[in-house]
Amino acid sequence: MGSSIQIKKDQKSLHKWYLENKRPLPWRANRNPYFIWISETMLQQTTTTAVIPFFKNFITKFPTLKKLAQAPQEEVIEAWAGLGYYSRARNLHKAAKALALLKTFPKTYKELIEYSGFGPYTSRSVSSIAFDEPVGVLDGNVIRILSRKHNLALSWWKTKERNTLQSLADEYVQGLKSSEVNQALMELGATICKPKNPSCLLCPWLNSCQAKKKNTIEQLPLKKAKPAKKIMLWEVYRPSKSSKKILLIKNNYTPFLKNQWLLPGLIKEVKTRPKSYDCVHHITNYDIYVQIRSKTLSQIETFSKKSEIIKVDPTEIKKFAPSSVLQKILDH
Ligand code: SF4
Image (cartoon, helix red, strand yellow):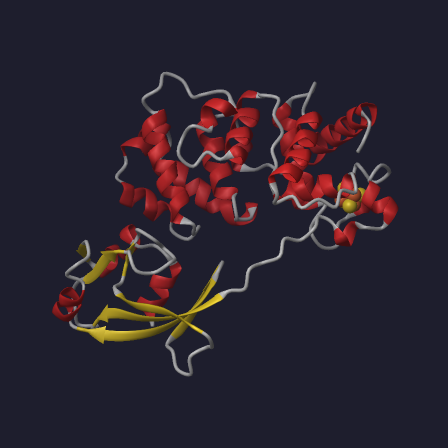
């Protein structure tokens, strides 16, 4: 890997590049740890451009940690609607309730990682960006940049090899403001060292990048093999159009959207795509073929008698069940 002297040089050129090129993102307006935490949680699995309107809307609704902690969960889920991965919103709310009991916001990643939804990435990004704790962060962007910069063909999804990258990321933030160096790495990955066709000519590391020298950019970082998707056939019970209420159950029957409010139904894994279906929905590990069955509310209630149920007004559905697959079914 690189010598300490080289890393210091690269750290400085990266830092300079960042100060000259950083985008004016709304969560960079100040160093409020609450705002940084919200933005970093939203940015997981979602692009910066897509997050901006959600972030603005969320902090308008919940301008302080206290306001978020005091809000009913349905309101938090509703404000999250469209971002997906709703467990993040539930964890965020749970952590807000615990953090609001403290006198001050925790300043180190070791303290933060104890709270719901604070994994290694979020804890480190919040402690470094808000409080300059000298810890590196490792997201997809940083994994890509460091793998290329140091020409490392690592199985980064395995703990030991990921730790190698983590140590390297930690080294880059020593001696300069870690808030800026970490954001510089993320920014370089998002705007220059992109997965495909990186803009190497604009990169502050053009002359020291090992993958550029060895012509291995296209192969790095290594790609984790994706497990084959399962094909699911989902027969779902929707009340007839004339019904004034929609019945939802606390989901205990599908392998996705677990413990969330969902339309009742039956699901099974099948080998091939069914010949007839009403709509299809793709999520990380599943291709879900939906067959919609229109029933009366009392028929659905009888079917769901063993589950925890709620009946909601169709206009309020997003508060309880914001997932896009549900919207797709109800719009069908
Ligand atoms: S020179 Fe190219 S491949 Fe290397 S870090 Fe910069 S953008 Fe990425």
